Length: 225
Image (cartoon, rainbow, N blue to C red; front, side):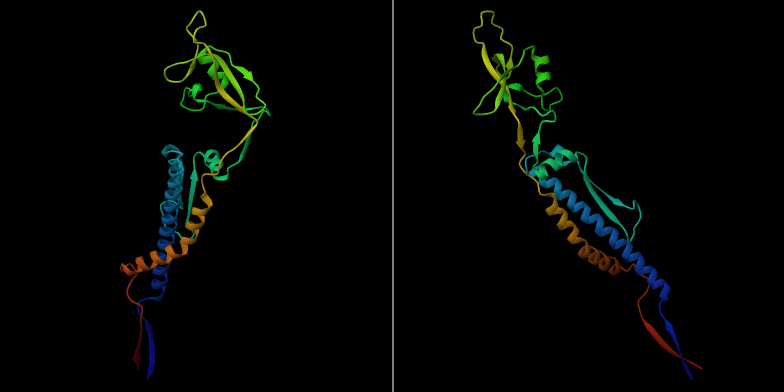
């Protein structure tokens, strides 16, 4: 009499099922880590007072798209990388032309699209000329001869006699400015990266316990004559 060894279920089917489980686990783990990182970065931006509009520039995507893979990867990025990076690194900003950086004061108002107004745009809109005032002990100024309206904006004086006219500071002029570091994106990126192995294991176990694998592992010996 001899013994014949049968493996139930089929070994090839078992390996294929394990690979499928691994692909799904890795893909789910990278997707979860990417989503968590996107959420964390958005939370940092809004928490730093930089606004929801900037936070919504943080996006995420998974590769390959639409199919599980053992080589799955997640990408998290910003559609406004220069702005986000500046708040993350706190750089020293200098004028590109080597002269002054202009910082609008409240009397300058906002640009037409709601952004920072430039001296040239301010002069065109207000019909006034800006005058440079050098100050040795502090930032120099660009000022206009006009008045403040009821919204606190510098405008032309309506008085023909000069009554109520004043020298209104419109812009500060500085040679450079140090932007404060308000974000720590590397911290959250490191946490997301370190979480991936645990997420893979958790998702692999979860996928297998749902009964997705074919059959049960086992070895049966039966006699054969």
